[in-house]
Image (tube, rainbow, N blue to C red; front, side):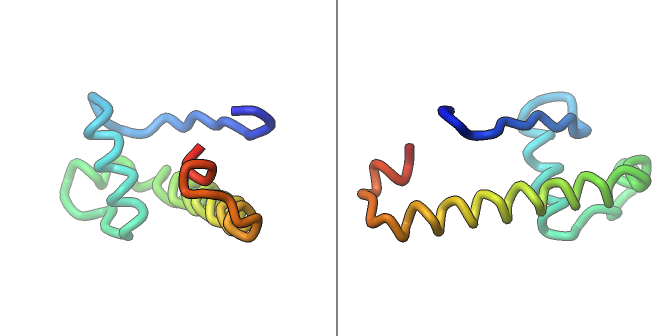
Length: 77
């Protein structure tokens, strides 16, 4: 990851799949459904905000790389 920022965010879950499911729920705006999710209510806005910032940064970086007419392989790297 030359020159790129790396960020680790702790999310609720007992394994990688639960963590990913949680982030997908946050991105979809589905958080808050069910008793289990209600315990995360105070931290959801901050997590959602940080997730949004990361996705927007990724989109900006991808647009820049796409404007450079890179091959699909180069974009994937």
